[in-house]
Image 1 (cartoon, rainbow, N blue to C red):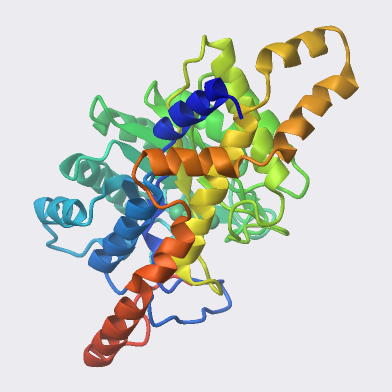
Image 2 (image 1 turned 180 degrees about the horizontal axis):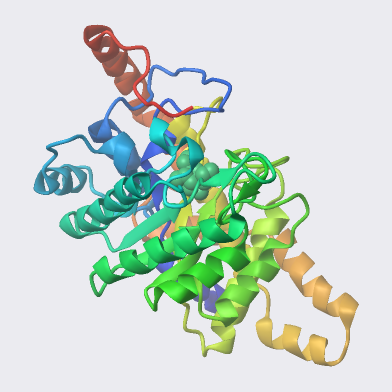
Length: 400
Ligand code: PSV
Ligand code: MN
């Protein structure tokens, strides 16, 4: 790799931040159950501590996404949470309201026919917006689980209107520096229709909400074989891409680690981002890169480090695509050469360049080995096992 390319890699990695999900460190799993791990986080302090070690070793994860119901308890003081995160070397990132666990949401939350239930759901989101302001986070990330299970169960248009109204009100509550991300998902938990089922619905709602709302693309939230990089390219072109939830999938929303099934897909997404930046004179858009994975089988902290390393690797590989030459090939209709540029970049071994970046930033050459050698997992596993026994709990998160 030439010195010039190494410099580009260094600059790109310096700016490439990935947010860790608090829930990825806890005992989460599949909807059929979860396999418990001694080292799983019990509370927010544990999650921040685990995220802190991932950031310390990878140097690129200064923020931790929080889920309101799973991470915050009644009476929690914002300053204490901020201080706790600081102590762990991280800060609170996106705030995720939770509209999918309360019994009263059986027929929906913000789309529910009952104005009282809609009102309670709205208040929860507005509280989350305020919580974000209190903990110094500037992203609120909403996933709408609402939908119906049977044809005719409710009016699809009626539900759209109810949601539109609620979302419009949320925008009025945002502080000037807060962004509202709206995530879509085709199905699950609803199995007939989902109220925000695809990027188009998310785009339309965000557009109507106002200038601070954007679309969140969760890579696991698409139908089989959907061209995600095309969605990304369109959203970039419309300046409506707010962020990602990274994970991989084989069938549906499987929460597998990024790039474990189809690394080329993620590479192609990054290629669209680099291509867009090249068209803007090298200026990258503000995009929140977040991980959304619940590790049921893999050790949680290692899976997170592995994911971050994979994201960096694919981001750097995609950076190697010569965008100027690609454009020339495209203009000449040279399909084999155009595709060849992508394939060659994807096939390039970039590990030395990434190691050079790590060493230059005082980081371990291999964060995963460094973690294994640190003894952190053995220590927290023993501590948390004892704490669980003392607390009389098996596992502490309500989400499977
Ligand atoms: C829903 O499947 C989702 O992707 C949303 O982002 C939730 O916040 C997250 O998963 C919970 O794991
Ligand atoms: Mn998600």
